[in-house]
Image 1 (spheres, rainbow, N blue to C red):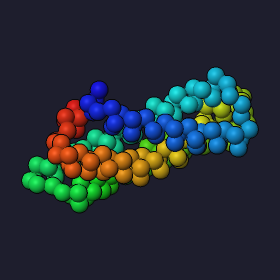
Image 2: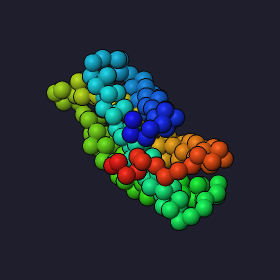
Image 3: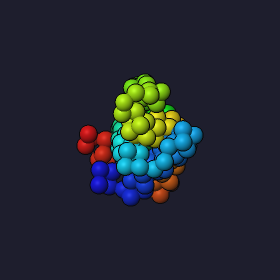
Image 4: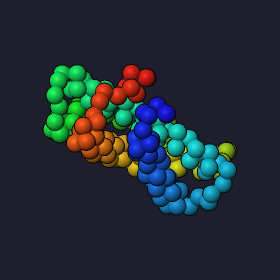
Length: 166
């Protein structure tokens, strides 16, 4: 509903698949079974993955809207706007990932009381943050460019309403 586009909503759901992949890999490598604690970790991971994807798309829309406001735009302008928007979001995304991973990493090596419950929560989040970061920083801008170039070729490229909704 935020983006008024099913295609953009789909692009934002895809990070959960990438996040789940990283979470499953780390969970498997650490030997944790699925439990309520592990599912709680996945729920938290999916929330972070979708949130960072939404913020990335909003930044991409803002950069594209600035280009559209300057006048006529072509495919190269769409690509430049995507690069500009992605670069603006890079530091914030890397800080989010660093904070999450640095805060949860000690839990993965802990062996004290309660660690048997906390480790299955932390493992999916740490593993998923790595793969989700790759997706949000690289693939979301690529998918955005593909969608907007297709709209430009059809003559349907207009400023977004979602960039102003935040």
